[in-house]
Image (cartoon, rainbow, N blue to C red):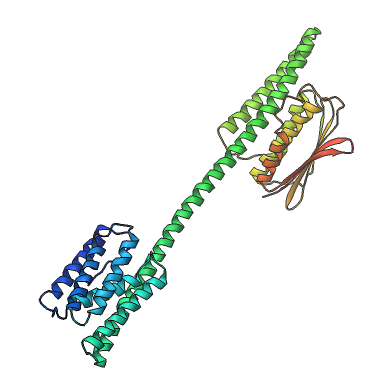
Length: 378
């Protein structure tokens, strides 16, 4: 017969199986067993009480189920030779005990062993049954049910481990998605910072120059500054649209972008010398985009802190990495915009290049401010 053994979480189907087992036990004992001596009747009724408690035990009431199984083991095992119902109770207890998942393994095996010992005592000492065939049949039944219970226990352990693994994978996926979202937000924030700092800083300088020229009566030169401001604003708007739309650069040309940044820097009144190694070659779009943004930030910083000082931009490449150096002479007083930033420029440079596996070193070298960028091609 089928006996449910999920003592950790009692379901409706489990209760139904247990109730059917109780009915079978009672019907197999009433009218088919001698109720003498009195201790036999007491133990049989005790096994019924234990089984009934096992049926109605609330879900999660582990103490109550443990007690009920112990009562079933004692009552059913000690009277197994006097009643078919008691034999069913004893075998069901062996199956349930070896399948227990909510208890240590020693408890289930100990309870099963106690049941087997009581069954043997009932057969040999009480009923006088010493036939090797009968004892072998009893032992075979106990072993089969014990192995069934053990297999059930292992299946439930595997199912619980799978459930925990699925839950762990769900948590890992959620954390990975959150980390990816944070990284993407950081990337977009750096892009916005670079675009705004570069474009707005250049516009402020151009408009300040135009205002000064107008006050001096140099209308034509002021108009040139305004036109340069317009060009810079158009370029910044294109970059901003690309960032806000979170678009990946397609067909990105690092050399062209660097020369474009140099042209914008010159348009704001700065001086920049560009040296690009002819054998530099192409890198991945992510690396080229990161290098471009860092150079853009470095030129913006040069305009802020060392206006009018010449800047050198050198790009070289090897078989495995790209190296770019942006250097400018230090200014004794700094520019009017030196306090306009948030101080996140260098941090953004390092984060951006680190995201593609590279490094950024920035500091004073021989009287110049130098930014060294190293990044892998892929």
